[in-house]
Image (tube, rainbow, N blue to C red; front, side, top):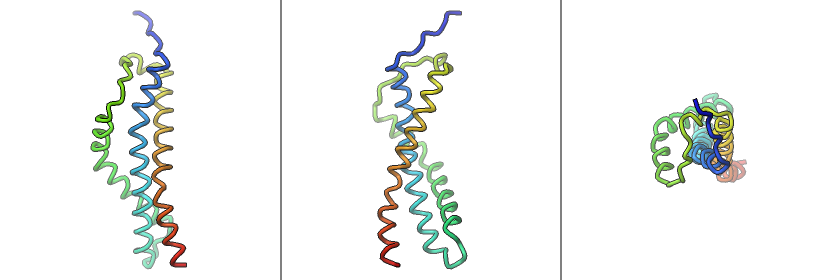
Length: 132
């Protein structure tokens, strides 16, 4: 058995990018839908004893439903972006450096996406101030 050639930095970077970019879309969608639906549930159901945390939890369920429903659409969209192929072999995918890049790419991507997905807080925050 021949030893595996370690992947170049560029290949590792492209691999992390190919993992991370879809997580940006998922994080954005997940967080924004959770905030909007949680706020709506809180607004309409607070009279029935639903607290803020219960509304947030139910909003998270709605976001999960949407993610399950439209996850493949997002995947297809990001495939059409034309990101350059990373060129890693199936055997290289098992290397610790490659696995760490996958983890790093997903963490960075989801963090960026969820941070961008907090935009409803700017919209909802003004509405709360007006009602107080």
